[in-house]
Image (cartoon, rainbow, N blue to C red; front, side, top):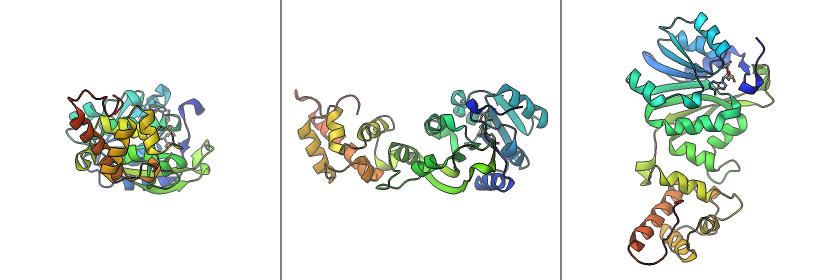
Length: 280
Ligand code: SAM
């Protein structure tokens, strides 16, 4: 069966890497592991040999049929579905526990999958994911580094991430054009700890990271915030308005968001123009 490049089918062909991925999940005895894109079953085989249940989500019906023929349903449930439509919350409720996630991801939808996992965080315990090396660099980047940006803060708001190891194209068949990196994501959202709202803070992050070359203050003004209010909010949060969002840790961005919200609350009821527009 020829690999379908449109579906990101680059099959992992490196036994040591497969063992490292499953080991990185830790002890999953009796737990449910959701595998994203099981393909021909390279990682599924290693997962199914451990104690626990595998929910394998594969969009390609031909590959799904192969997996069903190989694995007994009591060890592996094969779901033929686009993972972006998979209901992690319902699967977690059925399993009666937070889910473990593993996958050598189809690279053409890496970002939507990461955002889907972030949105499903309440249903998830940890994930061990293979992505393009550059994406792993961005996801795990520290403030001030070249790779730090919206993807880094967004993923890191939902828990701790760590890079594990990198593989060359030759570890796959057919080989992709890029290197690949496995990272681990332990879900532990930071919204409550940072005193920010789960809906409006991500929207605020999108605003302040909207244009990489603009300062934070300019991005806020471009989003409709009044110049005087921008100055006041930065002063309150102790942040230089000329800073770029890329230089700030999430704690500082949260402090700025809280000070903007405080100003909004104190100006509510006054006839003055609101401090921010509905984007924030
Ligand atoms: N896990 C296998 C391995 O490591 O050899 C295959 C990994 S391959 C990089 C990605 C897999 O994701 C392919 O089997 C592909 O058919 C599947 N896939 C692509 N798009 C998908 C989607 N939207 N939902 C679920 N699976 C998808």
